[in-house]
Length: 213
Image 1 (cartoon, rainbow, N blue to C red):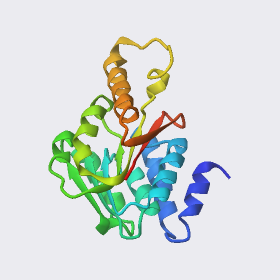
Image 2 (cartoon, one colour; image 1 turned 180 degrees about the horizontal axis):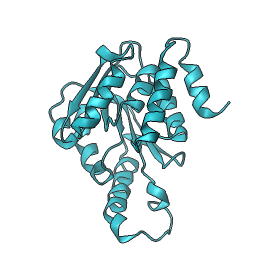
Image 3 (cartoon, one colour; image 1 turned 90 degrees about the vertical axis):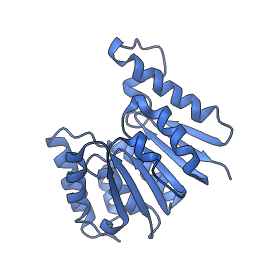
Image 4 (cartoon, rainbow, N blue to C red; image 1 turned 30 degrees about the horizontal axis):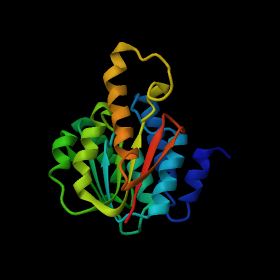
């Protein structure tokens, strides 16, 4: 049994139809070249969500709602998720998929610029998942910081970006700004005494930052 099958088996008990929906979404994403979290990154993400069991979640980067539903399935039973998506077309696709799940009334999709929409949020979030414009990660972190609960976890995908962020692999000119910003993000969460950050090489690299109470 591969990792994808194991993850789907874990949610089979509570959500009889959800694994089939997620499989459909994965196939749709692959067929339509929609970037979705890969299976190794998904394992780290769902593990952190299951450990935290958040009640309020902010997701930055919805795409078609694939990771959104995985987060919902592993979070607290009363979870509320706000997910931000720049593309109206992608947000509409996500809405169609999410509406077919039991989490439809617990997930709010907000369309538009994430940096602006983060600042329109209120209350505290127990978990933040960042998977949007890589060059904006430091800005996203600074903007979500005031919204974090005292023991929040912040998860950022693709922080190792094709192996360019850590190590001495030459960075192509077109990626230099992205790599610089991702290195800045890693410094922000690793040099901050309020957080304990783990960098997982799974997938394209995930940074999981646990905030201390």
